[in-house]
Amino acid sequence: MIARGAHLTSIRQNGLSIESPLGEVSGLRIPATDDPSDIGVVDLVIFTVKLWDTEAAAKAMQPLIGPHTRVVTLQNGIDSVAVISLQVASHQVVGGVIYLFAVIDRPGVVRNSGGVHKMIVGTDNQNPLIAELVEALVQAPGIEGLASEDVRRTIWQKYIRLVPLSAAAALTRRPIGHVRDNTTDRKFLQSLLEELVAVANAEGQDFADREVTDGIDFYDGLPQEFKPSMLEDVERGNCLELPWLSSRVCELGQLHGVATPANWAANWGLCLQVGGM
Picture (tube, rainbow, N blue to C red):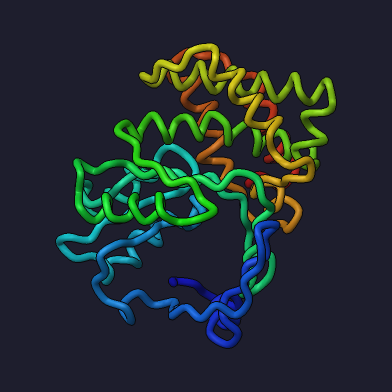
């Protein structure tokens, strides 16, 4: 594990702990460092840093990369594969998504709030390493593991659901259950979603109107008190992934002539809340 600061210190001293409605793990001993050169070349890198750290982390992981290494990025947003491919050969970078709601609650402790547990990885032309990873996911209890023949579409599908969820909860500073149960907030959430589908289609996807209904159904299935990570970041005074989420939607809407007033409002409101970031 690559970690840093107090989180790394705690993992080294006490192990990694996980708190979840599915059960808890305490003191899991995992080799951890903040220097990839301590590890050397590996078969597989699971790339999960926040979006603002993408470029720096991609540069820092160079000691991990050999000719057969694969980097699976599970980040939010739609640009991760392209950004990492500036530092690593593009054929070694594999797109993926994860539906897993978790946050570093305190140093050495990851808190999972329940809900969906799903990981989808691009097939990478049947690369045996990626095939082995998918098979391990399929066999693992507690998580749904899948392979995607069209991972770009899979990434867009998560993006469509993630951005409205993150923006509406973070802007109102309320868990998703309270957002979806309020008539006005629910309409705003749907407007964000409709704009995302329109932008995705302008970008070359072919999502039908059903994608909006499916998105609302997804939100309705989340735990009442679920908080997306952006809301957690707002509450903790952390940086936000806005430039790659709501801001990016507005940028693409402007590029393609697709109106995105709800996303503009969400982005503007959140920028005001966090002092322009």
